[in-house]
Structures are given as C-alpha cells and as structure tokens.
Image (cartoon, rainbow, N blue to C red):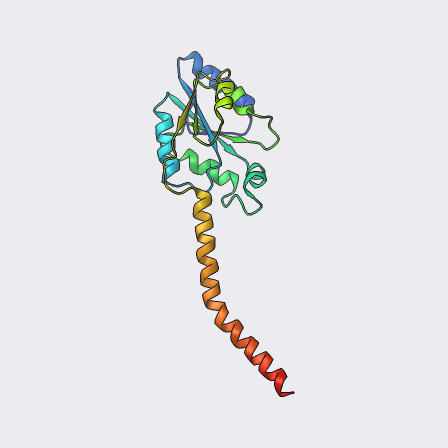
Length: 186
C-alpha cells in the first residue's frame, strides 16, 4: 500500500497512485481549494469529506491561480506552506498542487474520484451535472464556518485601518495646523 501524507506536484504521478489505490478497492475522494490561512471551517470540511471514502486527496491552488482569482495581495500563505499545512490535517491523505495553466477541471479529470466534494458556491447545477461524467458522484457540502478566509482578512484590514486612522488623524491635524499657522505668520 502507498504511504499517505504525500505531496504531489506531478499530476501523472498522482494518477498512477490513484489507479493503484483503486485497484486495491479504495474509494477515492477529491476536494479542492485555496486553503489560505487554514481555519476550523477547513478542518471540519475535510473531516466531512474524508467520511465519504477511504482516501482523501486535496487539490490546492498555486499562488498565481489564487492571485488571479482573489487579487494581488493573496495568498497570505505561500503554496508550499499551504500544501504542508493541509497535509498535517488528520483526514488528509494526499495533497496536490493545482497549476494556474491547467485546463478546466484538469485534476478532476486526472483523478476521476469516486466522490467529488465541493461547497455550495463552487459549481452551478449545470456544472455538477457535467462533472458527474468524471466522478462517481458530486457531493455539495454547506460551509463549515461562519466566516471565510477572505472575510477574516477583510476584517483584519478594516481593524488595522481604523487603528491607523485613530492614531494618525490627530497627528495629521496638528501638523496641518502648525504648517498652516506658520504660513499665516509670514
């Protein structure tokens, strides 16, 4: 049997492992995402995903793919650290890096999971129907936390901006008054 707890960047190598596991009778589960700033919602989600089969593979978006989708200030955590962090979560057997240049649904078509796990806003109903040709089934889970990573980052940014405003506004006003007051005396 293959050792779990492995990172893949080569999808062909992963495909070989998946074929061997499937030949041994393992039920393969696949899910995908960014996993930037791993939080309790991610852990709960992956725990629920693992319950659907024997082997859980997590596809993780590379840095460029995340920047293209979420903006230049993302990801907060670089791809190698995200891969390692997710691999340390108990339910996860394998992680694989998803490249920005990969064609649509490349990892899904490569793995052909028995169960593809997604959140409710990942795919449209039409896409789910289309994906079923590559998967045994597509299972859509509710979000497992009240706040997403993006929302947590926005909240931190807003709190930081408020603190800066509170700290700098009085100082800026004083500098402006001193500057304007000095100019009036000339």
